[in-house]
Structure formats: structure tokens, C-alpha cells
Amino acid sequence: MEDHRGNDREEIFSKRVKAGKRTYFFDVKSTKSNDYYLTITESKRRMRDDSFVFEKHKIFLYKEDFGKFLEALQHTVEHVKNDLMPDFDFSQFDNQESESEYDDELKWE
Image (cartoon, rainbow, N blue to C red):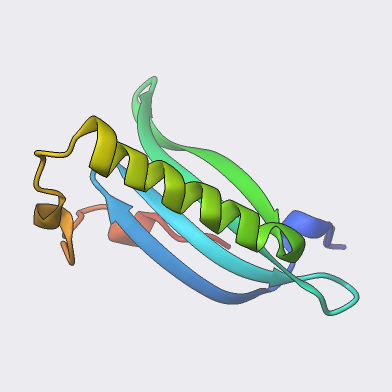
């Protein structure tokens, strides 16, 4: 019998963002009462003993927090770009697709 707690719910939508040695997954999932929430997962490939493992960190974001989360994220990014690194050209990272030899290994079940 499968355990269907909050983190094992069916995915409604998923978006993967490859970022160097990290991959981020943005997944929309549903609750038992047909409400929706977002999980943001960071996955990093690490060497352990003689094999590779994926270290994962997950954030659960609920609809009542979407606005506050987006506002804080945008404000923080703007602070870095405008106040801390005003002379840096961030446009070099726009629309950058990276090919990864690990694509097939980064799938959630």
C-alpha cells in the first residue's frame, strides 16, 4: 500500500530549471481536498563513497503565501542587481539553456 501524504501527491504541473551543478524543480501538486500548492526542490549531485547521490532540499509554498514569496524574491533579486552589483551584466544569463549529461538521472517518481 502506498503512503499518500502531502509530499507524495500527484503532480499537476512541473518545470525543471538546470543551473550548473544544481537543478531546481517547480512542481504544482494537489491536496486531498483539491487545493493546490507548490514545491520547490533543489537537487545537487554529490559523490558519496564510490557512487553519485542526489541531495535534495524542498520548500512547500501554499497559495496564501504566493504573493508575499514573489514580492520578497523580486525585492531581493533587485537589491542584488541594483545595489550590490550594479555594474554586472546579468543579461548574459538570460535564456541560457545548458545541456547536462545527467538529464536522464534527474527524474522524480
